[in-house]
Image (cartoon, rainbow, N blue to C red):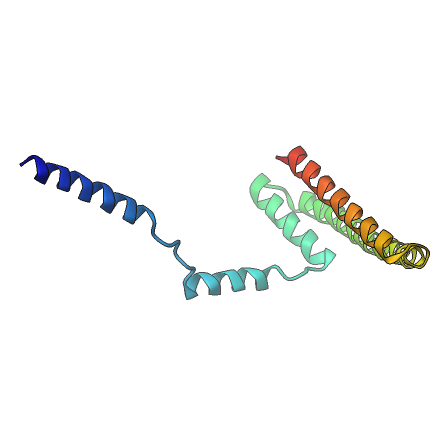
Amino acid sequence: MKKMLILLAAFTLTAGVVSAQTQPAKPDQAQIQRAKKLGEQRTKKTPEQRAEARAANLSKSLGLSAEQTEKVRQLNLAQAKEMDAIRAKNAENRQKAKATRDRHDTQLKAILTADQYAKYEQQRTERMANRRGARMKARG
């Protein structure tokens, strides 16, 4: 009898451990299709489309009058155009900064030996990893 209880307990524990180690479920085709649809819906909208959508949402949620809705739409349109200009400028500045870094690296590579440049690259990689780690801690 005692042996039976021990075997039953061992079986129960084993079954519990085995069932806890199941594979995570893979997304099915329906989930993949929904994700694709969401991605397609998030196409870049024009400033006019964004302004109109925001004004409509505020009008609906706040009960704005037609005059208020139009003023909000105009305000949103001005902000959307300004933000697009800022984003374009930032992209341009990023490209200029990358070109400057690339030129600097090329010139530095001509000055340093292969070993020195390899060590420099390693140090730079470590610095970047430390920065990313610090950012993650600050956000976390």
